[in-house]
Length: 401
Ligand SMILES: *Cc1c(COP(=O)(O)O)cnc(C)c1O
Image 1 (spheres, rainbow, N blue to C red):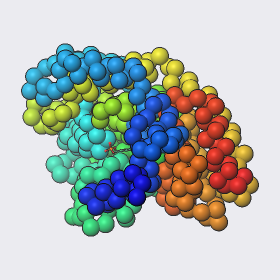
Image 2: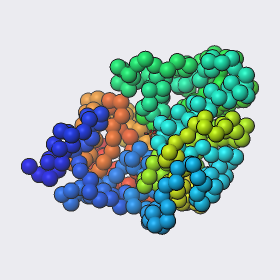
Image 3: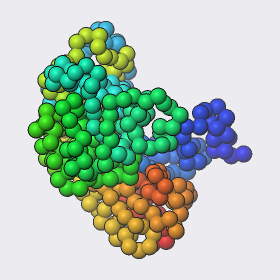
Image 4: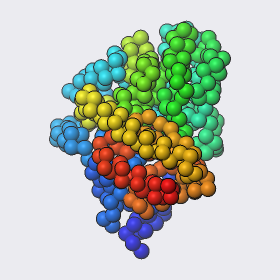
């Protein structure tokens, strides 16, 4: 048995099988490259689903974390700590908002947004108690908690986890008329991914997000943008909503906010929304801890330079140009996305997304399939153009294009 096989067998014996990882065991990573336990190097074209936008072992982020490790790592919110105010101020400024509610994982931040919208609905909008409704989109992915999977349309994510949380209505993504129909007097929020990541990097039709913005503003409904995967530079702008000059009421952030170092998530909004909370009504032991704040502060500083958005724009243009050349050649049916983010639909005759991912792995490129025949390409924004081109060469070789 190789050390890879031993490691995988042990993982299969002693961990729940809620994932189906590619058979690679990573031991080391730097920038856009990962090295496995047997010394093979792989180009990371997934970047932890955008949690690693700034690459593996980014020196600025690692140094920020190391400096904080030597000072103080956790206080709980029972006390103030000296990185908290700075983090909240800087993140709010990045978002053009007034307040931040920090959590840890993306799902917790989505839960927080749902709770915030409901509380806002009862306390500010005047919705009758217990009647708040939140409109969401089909094929959404917002996380894995029982409430969040209650409004998923993915049977795999939902089955056998009921009973489900009520209070959500699902409408087709990209369909403004359906959204308009669903919004009623008890609707407190519309919750959307501005680009649907897990669904296959689906970009909504032009005008959809501005339409949702107009509708929600007119009807006194909060527009919550789940930018956990789409935000923080991935699409070439700080937020995917920026591409259509849309400013939601509430940003939900996660993944890249923790710099690939620690889980950091947040809900960001103005005082008229996040001001609804009183002490004791919501919280998290680890939310906004000093280590998380120190790393996320560095993430915000890096985003403030605009340099990563610029890279994602330039390299993204190149990526999409190259991928679009494959469309119509037989192997690739469609390519979607924005910036350094693409969903590539493989013709079923050329294999499933999983098979393509495995073949790419043999050529030392790591990607992840989603929903059958789609692979998702989302390398760290620090990837070099040469490495990106090399990765594309491997994709062309695997597809025989
Ligand atoms: C990953 C993701 C989440 C959930 O984040 P976790 O940190 O895995 O809980 C929520 N929304 C979107 C859009 C995501 O991509």
